[in-house]
Amino acid sequence: MSSILDNRRARLSTLFERSAMLRNSAIGALAVALGLAGGAAVAFGPVWAGFAALLALALVYLMLRYTSVGLALALFVATILPFGTLPFKAVITPNFLELALLALLAVWLLRLLTRPDDALELTPLGLPLLGFLGVTLFSFVLGSNASPDSLTLHNYFKFVLAVLFFFSVANCVRTPAQARLALRLLLLGGAASALIGLALFALPNALAEQILVAFGRIGYPTSGRVLRFVADDPSGVERAIGLAVDPNSFGGMLALVGAFAVTQAVAERPLLARRWLYPMAAALALATFLTQSRGALGGLMVGTLYVATLRYRKLWWPVAGAAGLVLLLYLAFGVGGQFVTRVTEGIQFRDQANQMRLGEFQNALEIIRRYPIFGIGFGSSGPDIDLGVGVSSIYLALAERVGLVGLFWFLGLMAAFFARSLPAMRQAFARHDDERGAALLGLQAAIVAALAVGLLDHYFFNIEFSHMVALFWGTIGLALTLETMNAEDRTTNGHDNRAFDLPRSLEDAH
Image (cartoon, rainbow, N blue to C red; front, side, top):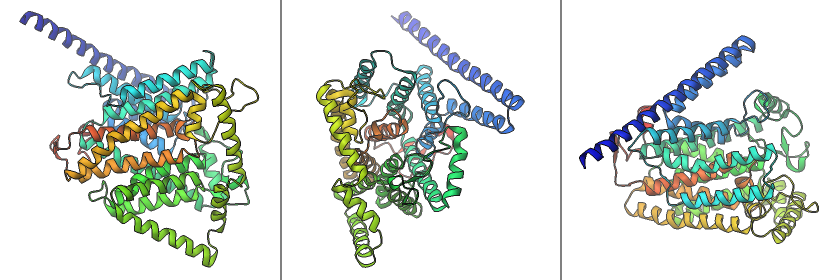
């Protein structure tokens, strides 16, 4: 018996050694490739290309060594620079987020092979989420007749990577210190993006456009609608866009992070000092307003009211005060008249944008009637020439693209998420674990805001906006990680987990 066990141990040891050799070989090969690319860039290209290649080499090395670096890069790219791509042309040019998500996924999978003590963490929603991906894959193959064009295939691949970010979060965030770091990164990325949006909005239009056009080297638009305005009227009201290209998707991201930031600003034991959280929450709220996205602003309000209803009743006072101030300024001085008119016309579906939405809704309902089970897939055109594809609603987009099967599967996932997260949040507060309770509540509010935004926008389920998909499922992954984390464990790597301290080194965050 002992000889059998010894043989098994020897085989396992050999397997782990080979896995470690594989990882080290991959690191070495990638380092050589990037080194050659950097040398070539210096020899044959501009000097800045060589520095960029060296920076990329350093980032890749750190990502392969520390999962926290990959997690930080993915969150910062998704919130700040979502459409940045490699600065050279290819048949399919990968963007920064795609590379970050792919590298992070590869690193933690390799780590599972090389560390016998690590186990694959699926979380209770992992298998149902894989089932949902299976439904989307079936609809994708069915809708393209198993022969999609290269652009649609690439976009769907990015969509799958974005959904798999859920598993990357679940397997890279294992300790309270890592959870705090990830949550702080989400806050900092969203706040930085809001500040960039506010700065570009405050600059003269010509200068702001010049700055945005400079990002054309990494895939950003250099002509056409670089700056965005209400009703596409350059003489009208400008819309804040940050580096997100589209003001509505920018507003959706701000609403998600903003709902979490508002919760932290009023929490008993927040992630950051309140002197930082208050201006961060204010910047996120102001930038959301300046996007002129009614769906995003409504989503942020719904997320805030969710928090006020479930836990922090004191939030009702600033909400009521802000509403009263807006009403006073409008009635007494006429301030904000244009925005009030837009909201009123939007509710009544009298403006051009919402009239177009009505047309999209009717079109989507007809597609759902004709293809109710698995939808029409993810192509840019549908099977019927009399019906266009695309609709500004997550729920209709789901039913249109992956059918009623996909829609109800998604709704079931959301119901299961809240059915687990709400009791975990209440239990954390009951045990006076205010840190974890507030974090769970804030992440729930972020998802509530995203689902509310989804009534009038589709970006959280759109293969062309993979950063929004990644933020959505990454947020759910963080919430489930906090839910299953042992709240009684007060020491990790020698740290006091009751304090929101950053890890002392990258090794602690690994």
